[in-house]
Amino acid sequence: MQMLGLGGNAQTISAEEAHSQQVAGELVIVDIRQPNEWAQTGIPAGSYRITLGTQNFAPQIKGLAEENPDSKIALFCASGMRSGSAIGQLKAAGIENLYNIKGGFGAWSRGRLPIDPA
Image 1 (tube, one colour):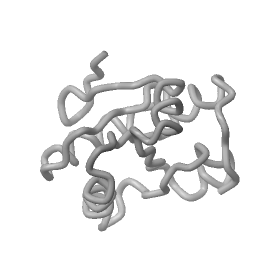
Image 2 (cartoon, helix red, strand yellow; image 1 turned 135 degrees about the horizontal axis):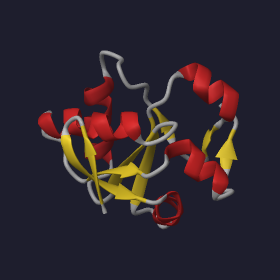
Image 3 (cartoon, one colour; image 1 turned 90 degrees about the vertical axis):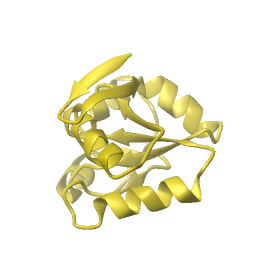
Image 4 (cartoon, helix red, strand yellow; image 1 turned 180 degrees about the horizontal axis):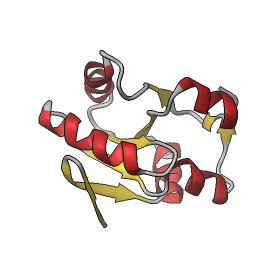
């Protein structure tokens, strides 16, 4: 499935697929929301927190990709819009194997997938 973001087409993955692949060690989830959002809702269990818009955003994602060369990187926000746009920025920085979790935290929550406190 494809999603049009500011950076062009981004591959999407459902929250359920992302969770299954994360558990299997095939995917790394990055929650790019703001700290106040994490505090309100918690974060997907086992995910990394790297806020979109910070100066080190792309270098931190690139570092995760280098640390996990055999894994996909899936970005996650509240609804999937910010993460879709962020993928375009990251691809422009040369980072590949990126996915957008369709529906973001809303889909994660509706799927009753595990959540860690922030």
